[in-house]
Length: 199
Image (cartoon, rainbow, N blue to C red; front, side, top):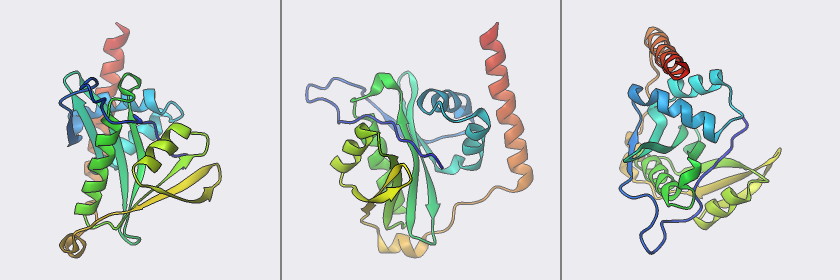
């Protein structure tokens, strides 16, 4: 998978400028249209089919950063219970929020959420030419392990709660009919938004 990370690279400036009052929360079906727009903006190499797959298949592990103007960033992780790893698949914010601290807040939430679910490791790949992301993650304590094709593998050990490890359970897989119905709803919502935008 061609994983790519786009994120803010520093916490909010000391003078208090930047994005304020960020709410970090899991997404719902009401966010599908906005999330599709963000995927297209931040990760333009993804096709619409790939985007719809991520949103519908992994809705339970997509977390958004919401400001007064709406969702401005998100991350998506894949639980790998057999490895004890929470794999960070995507983390991104809109370009107007670079260097605002939103990326840092999303990363911290990812680590806390993963640890609370009993995962021992945070892990992901970063494209070798993405120096902004590399500096960002190394600043936040991630260690480069080895190259994987045109990417570097990064890892960080999380301070997990032993009780969470014992009580951790796989993310629920939605039944086929539920996934099919949600896919139809997704296509309807996104299709209507594109139609209204063309008027």
